[in-house]
Image (cartoon, rainbow, N blue to C red; front, side):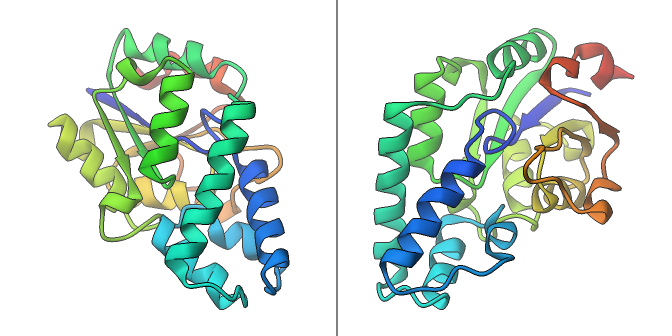
Length: 213
C-alpha cells in the first residue's frame, strides 16, 4: 500500500447528525417533506445532487440557492463547534507517518477547507477532493479515482477509510481496498459492509500494521 485516502463526514468529523439536523430543518422551513429514507439517500451525494434532491422533496427554492443556504448553516455550526470524531487527529498523523494521505469527501470544498484548517490537519494531506469537483458523487468511484490521480498513485495501491454504504461502494468501485469504520448511528447496509477488506471498531484501530497486513 502506498496511500491511504480518508472520507471526511462520519470518519474524521461526526458531521452526519449535523447535516441531518440542518437539512431536515431547512426542508421543513421551506415547505418540503422529509422522508424516512432521506438521510440514507443523501449520504455520499455531491452538493449538486443533494440540493436537487431537497428540491424534489418540495423545497420551494432553486437547487443553487438551497445549496448555498444549507452550506452557510453548516459553516456556522462548524465555527461554533467542530465535532471531530474521537481519535481522528491522532489516526491521521499516525498513518501519515507511513503513507501518503489523501481525502475524498462529498462535502463542498468550503467545508472541507474549514474542517482541515480548524483541526490543523490540512498539511497532513497531499491531495483532497470534493465530489463537487468530479462528475458524480458517491457511490460512483469518481472522487476516489480523482484523489488517487492527484496523489499520483494507482488505485490498486490505495486503502480507503469509509463509514457509509455509498462511501464503501464508491471506494470499492474505484478498485481500492476499503477499511470500514461504521458510524454507530448510521451503520452501513450489510451488502455494502461486505465490500470492506477490514472492519475497524474505531479510529484507534487504524495502524500501519493493519494497512500492511
